Amino acid sequence: MERQEPTIGKPGMQNLHFRPRHKTAPIQRHGNNGLVWKVALGVFIGMSACLLATCTLLGVGAAAVAEQQEQAQKEAVEQFLKVANSPDPMGLQRQVQDARNREIEAKALRPGQRCMQGRRLERIEGGWRDLPHEPC
Image (cartoon, rainbow, N blue to C red; front, side, top):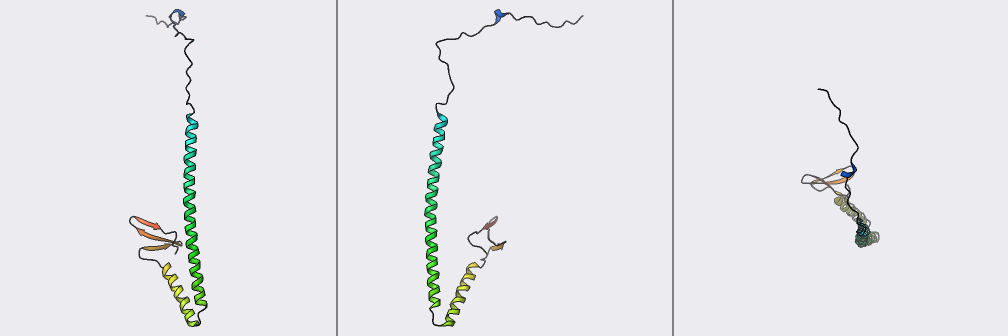
């Protein structure tokens, strides 16, 4: 039996069918009706509100910190004037030494704390916590 190659002939145009095109049907366009702009505007308003709230909170916090620092400076000046105006020189030395001792006690490591590379660390369950406002 001899093998025969398949042959491809011309397709018959009578078997092709096209959908009729309606001239009265509107052309459908896939649009988003400005959805992108609406989303962008919403994101902008939300971010602006967040920025305004953050700036407000930081401004209030900065004012409180400045007030505390001003109060601490006033107390330090009063203490200095009190020591400087003291008639007793030994009392002056004793007050200076007491001030130094209080400062050393404030900087001393409490139980469960360590000093590593100039940073104070506190032992907590499962590890260590950094205390950035209390240097060694």
